[in-house]
Image (cartoon, rainbow, N blue to C red; front, side, top):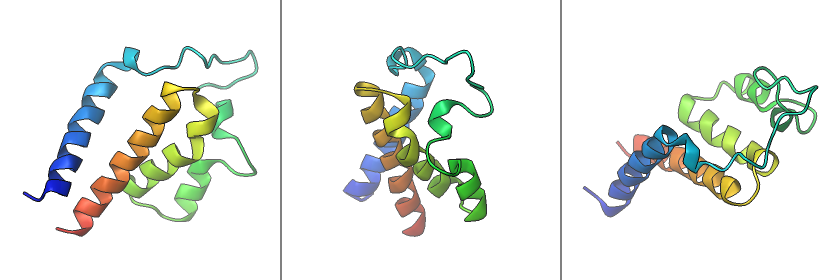
Length: 104
């Protein structure tokens, strides 16, 4: 296996492990306000003129591309500090995985 593909597999394993350990993701600095709809339309989803999900649907993105797009668009607005880095790493994981799929 190529070194780059090994790194993608390692990133995938780390992403899965991190999602299983939600306590490691720093969300303590973001708490919903009384007017936030934290399920359907939290504040970090509604920055700008359109929601990211509407753009993803309009562009008919596949899962990997859409996932990268959502993390890239929201990382600044949901977390501070380590949470931002975590979201950028998630975006990178999905981009690397898309590249791996294209190289098959």
